[in-house]
Image (cartoon, rainbow, N blue to C red; front, side, top):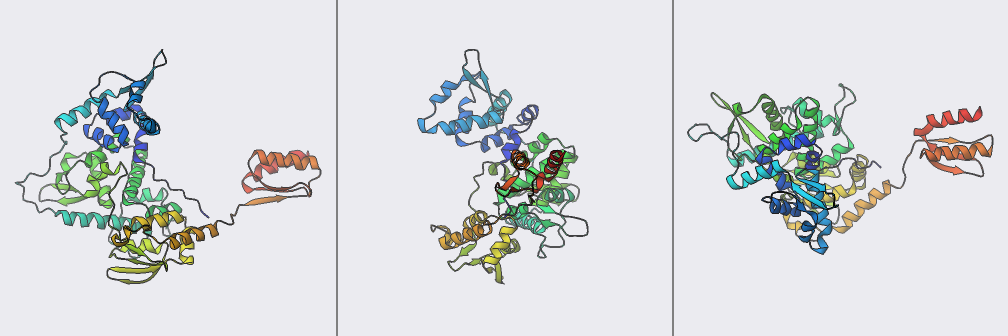
Length: 453
């Protein structure tokens, strides 16, 4: 049974891993300071706001006085996160007293942002310019459509529109782990991580792609801090407002073209100038950092007989359900399918875990059943887990079998050698036989050659 490999690592972990000078550079932008503040755990936010107008270091003992006895663990998590992001500097003085100091750059820019408000480096289109802009409803529909095309392209489904052209930079992101292509002649196929990615929440999917996109751009010489700064700054633009492309650098314009594939922005050509219009996916980026996205409208009803009714017109929903169920028939606004042992076994072998399927069904439960407890029948969730445990009964491990040792001393020495390498799977002392992992075969071969000498 394949192991789950994909991890939706928090975007702030990536920010925290930046070198100190790049973090300080990020904090020079007041919008980034606000975005970082939004992403913090509730207690960490409280500490930042309490320290915001305090000049100089504050004793750790004073901080501990703010904490109730049952909140010590949350206090440690909050302090650790602030130190990781270099918002807080920890100092141990000669008297072994620990003090905390707020990052001066972060503190100063957050103060200005709270008191005076932030001013974006670009203004939206003036009202006297007569350009027909899409309505908010049209923009939302565009964002959903682009995101679904993007994911359908990942599934490599025949349902994906042929007219959609995913940019080469986006394809490189897929090739990093979500798609695998042996050669140019064969079409790319989903990896285990790719299957798991499709069942993730939209915000988690979006930030996974953004994180990989940042890593990809860094490898091609784009400054990480500048890219993160631009993405978070984009989240403070107004949904539906048009902004002039001429206010962006060449690198930022190239980034926007890639973000169009995701549905984060819509590009519009005017008579003389070009504009970009942020969608909700873009303006919700900084809100998504806190991983507290509002519950989306569900569409799936699961019955005790393992049948599912999906009230949706989305091609993407149909393809995702096809990953772990058998589609029986499809109407214009209804998909009827069933979870069978065969369909679930196929999903499990592709690397999707039982808990991921159950979580997907719970998160996307139709409003009529979402209020029930449980929203997915217990006999269905229990059976899904049982089918997974059936596949886990046997685990195949490539191995080599050894017998006919010349003496017991050689046998015991060989067992000890294999054990030290962590490759000993089985031994029979009476018959002097053992089985070791195939990965240590070269070392075993060399060891036994020396024993013969």
